[in-house]
Length: 298
Image 1 (cartoon, rainbow, N blue to C red):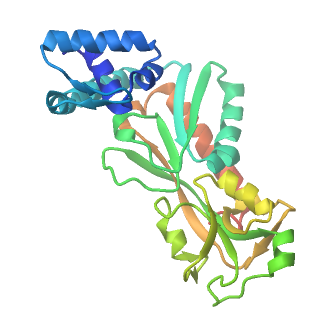
Image 2: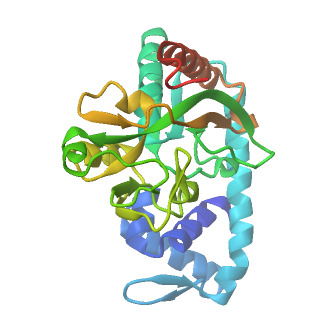
Image 3: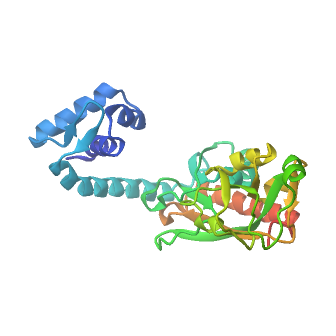
């Protein structure tokens, strides 16, 4: 199996359908089907068990999966090392972050960078989960979770604060929650428990006891919108909510600090376009946090 065959094999194994694999490979579905059939013919064995709706790995397919992933990692390592020696201020830098960090910090940094280096372009994906930086799913990740992978370069960019907010409409109807009552009689808007379990245990130091969670979302932008519409109380980033006239800050003396981390693979750290993005991000986080002290940064 050569690497080009492995690409198609891995895409179908991960997607489970020819259509989704074709979409990820940017080819048509018939091409994927032909490549898989040709590979199986060359190996004289079936790699997938086919059903009308799904492709499942055969026993041989499962045995080859680890080797195909190793080929993928080797190919990505070659690309990273080649890119690391690139001193041109052009090309694409891929960034994974959260929607709120993108709005508050990443986009302002990229706006400044566009003025300095107009030949650099960007791919920005938003997710609350840590991307697989070891497999080079992105050049940079910016998030509030510090990864444990020792292969990665990790740097703290800033510390921001989160606080509790509700709309004027909600407060008029339900009142302000009382300290020590564990939000009894109040509606909460939270990240899903599997994503941020600590928020289901306490919010700004107030313990939760059988919380009435009326809405869960992995998007803080959506939680902010739900708060504006009076659905309940949410823990939001202060840099997003403090200047919003629609919100009432609950227990303003209480806050939750969150460290923001820059994560990158060592193979790309010296590429000129990546360094330019890192420098702009560092400057933007430092400048924004200075402006917002003491509410959003330590």
